[in-house]
Amino acid sequence: MAQLWGGRFTKETDKLVYNFNASINFDKRLYRHDMEGSIAHAKMLASIGILTEEELDQIQTGIEGILEDVENGSLEITEEYEDIHSFVEAVLTDRIGDAGKKLHTGRSRNDQVALDMKLYTRDEIVAVRTEIYHLLETCQNLMEKNLYTAMPGFTHLQKAQPLTLAHHIGAYMEMFKRDYSRLTDIYARMNYCPLGSGALAGTTYPLDREMTASLLGFYGPTLNSMDSVSDRDYVIEFLSALSLIMMHLSRFCEEIILWNSNEYGFVEIDDTYSTGSSIMPQKKNPDIAELVRGKTGRVYGALLSLLTTMKGLPLAYNKDMQEDKELTFDAYDTAKGCIVLFNGMLKTMSFHPEVMEKSAANGFTNATDAADYLVGKGVPFRDAHTIVGQLVLHCIDKGISLDEMSLEEYKAISPVFEEDIYDAIAIATCIKRRNTIGAPGPEAMMRVISLNQRWLEENQDK
Ligand code: ARG
Image (cartoon, rainbow, N blue to C red; front, side):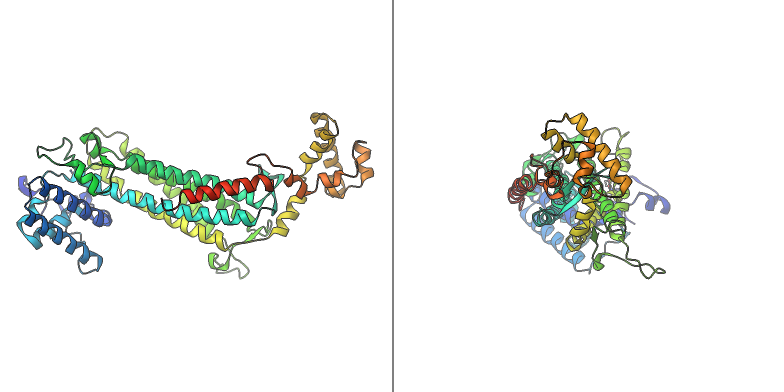
């Protein structure tokens, strides 16, 4: 096991130490980004005369060959190398000779790994944002279709007021839009290139950091070499955005699990997204929703882990920072996978509007509207609240709903009630009249849906 840094050592590293220190098993997934960074670095070295055009050509062709071989499976990234950086440099030198040894001029693994992690994370931010966009399209589609699908709205998981499925899904639409824009913000803040920062204090070579930054699609170079090699804020920010996404998915999953239960019967998760029981033949379980809810903990764990790893580190690079990878990669994979699966489940789920509507009607969700009706007839709201409380008590006693009471029963509690109470408390009326912006009334919802449409168009292909 030849090491990049073997020169000043007289003894071989202990095997256990070697394994404990090595990161190849998990940083091998940075191979593409590592090679992309190396090509940019080599081009820049050639532009300032440190490499000849011929050396650059050898390096570039060499790295491209390695990339191809890794991707077609003919070259395996093995534990023989300490990390992905050592792997690329060693194989390159093996293949092209001395020019390969010049690649690391003016570079440290500290700025190299900072770059690789940034390039990788940047791609993941874009990939996650794309999946969130697809999820938003599904939500928008469901909203358009369910403008009039009545359902109960809950507080404390108790039926509260009637609303629509479009409105309920609209709440998640807002969450996912915020998630989307959070990812855009993170991207804008993190997209500066650390390459050229060296180990911590820059280099004595006249590196053109503007050039490498631009070759790699960054807005420009980072401005402090110590910060550049020790900054993992963008990973933490991304993990935090992923944690919020998972929290949103998890809440939605929790609702879908409830809605999918026999007791609610609001929805049925498609067979393709459900699983059975090995013993109970009747079962069709919402495992996917439960797993998404469950995996949320893993993503939070990665966030907490990295925050903790970073909190006591003196400037600049410390090996602790190698711990930024395993859980982070797991969190990236987990969150991205969950968004895709959740979107598929939501798209294929069937809704039962009759059940939802019936549930909205049986549970006094229109009690506030009955009070508002009295207010409309001149009764002060506080008195109206008490009167409707008496109506509810009467209904509970008789096992009926408000619209099943006779006008005589109404009048016995308050003479103000007239025949028009029935229309006032019809679920459709209750919903239709809630038309302040953000409310479930179809007119208000149509405005929101068209604003969302514009939002989707503006954010397409970003
Ligand atoms: N494997 C290391 C990491 O992931 C790369 C940087 C190593 N730098 C060093 N000075 N040992 O952080």
